[in-house]
Length: 287
Length: 288
Image 1 (cartoon, rainbow over the protein chains, first blue to last red):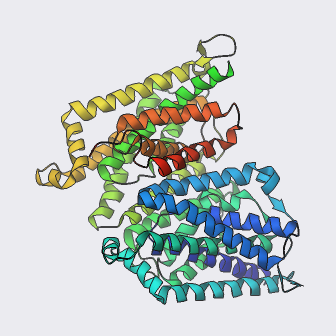
Image 2 (image 1 turned 90 degrees about the vertical axis):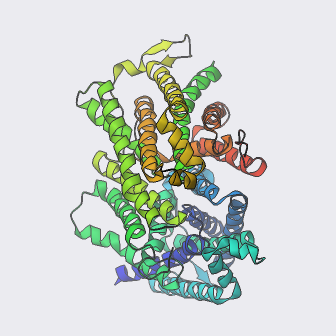
Image 3 (image 1 turned 180 degrees about the vertical axis):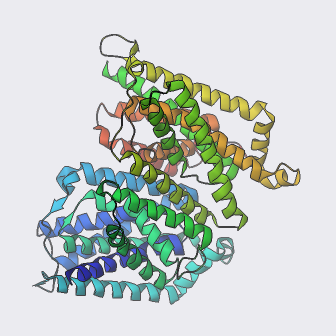
């Protein structure tokens, strides 16, 4: 029973991350391998604020979300102003830099040992310390996130983003500001990833750099690719399927030393296979 | 004295990075693909050479075999993956994701076979000191890296400007459409380009680990530095990419005097941001 609860909680958090990656990669069409870094920044900010009792849970989440929005705007704006390919470099750079900071800035992040003992979340003065309550919080956050994503995508702004993916030049010729729309998508992606980070930290009560490295970013990309780009259903299916994969792998007898490599290998194979045979994913639209 | 030693180390790393940058730029300018899996080819070369030398194969034979296998790998990635995707008019993003997938596959096959831990070559000649006195020392392998990298760079320049295939490559790079109607067959040229770039990048791919050791995920940082060098040097300028790679490596090494080594990625990225804000076309941008 506890296993299913924690699976549901983690999957909900990863759905938020899937929405974030989908906004950036699927909808705005920006290749990104740094979503895990933004996720990590959110997690570390919320942990810091809660552990030092600066604020309660909700304000901490807000700070994390705002900070991640600013971060994403700051990194996408100069790169996108120049060329889409430059963002690939920016993205790898941000991810490697973030891993270096998470691992080496021992004072702020606990370094490679991570941060233990993050207090549980609280809502309106009530501490949510049981797993059931945490599941409710995360599933609630997921539903809110999905609702926001759905509303954004059917608003005029969502149509603008879709149009950009179809034909960027035509949209620009129609007098729309393409750069601003892309940067806004990146900003929203930041808000999603930052709040997912806060939930993740309070749920596990322990975070370390290995949850936010390049491999984690590749996992997020695989989730979107497998689920399907640009749709809500895709962002939900991907995380639920891929989080079940480690459990399936544990049924097969693989030596623990190569388990991590085997998992990442499967993600890589999935990325190639889906791009070759089904670029729209299980429930998505043309990538 | 320490500064001098760091300059020497920087020269060796910089020349190796220069080759990565030049080969990446070759692929990028001809196929227009951001070939992320180049980092995987770079890593593969080192591991192949390591397995052979630990089984007693002479180093030079191991190097040649590694170069050949990497060339074949590069050609296969182009022919089986990129070309296939391009035939289906896949978007740039799709090819980029496939390339990242290829990188993940290569790195993790290596990690599953050789373990993710650091491996060292056991070649006693490599760490012998050639020159230097006191605290400054230049090892055989460092000299070899510099010489081989400069030779690879020179060879590539000669090849691109003096041979028929090289001229075809540049023709395809500058105007693929015109190349197509003059029966240059860009697709086939792309395969040659990938084979050549992968062969050349595996030379530092083998030599650098002899000096610094091997790790399956160690290809990404050099690739990032090399792409930054390519952009800062000006896309399309091969010499610019090489010069900037050496300059970035020297800056990284000199920064060790004031900042601990684990932050050197920060220095590299900082250089990139500066260029992006103030001179996005790079230092030696080709006149168009």
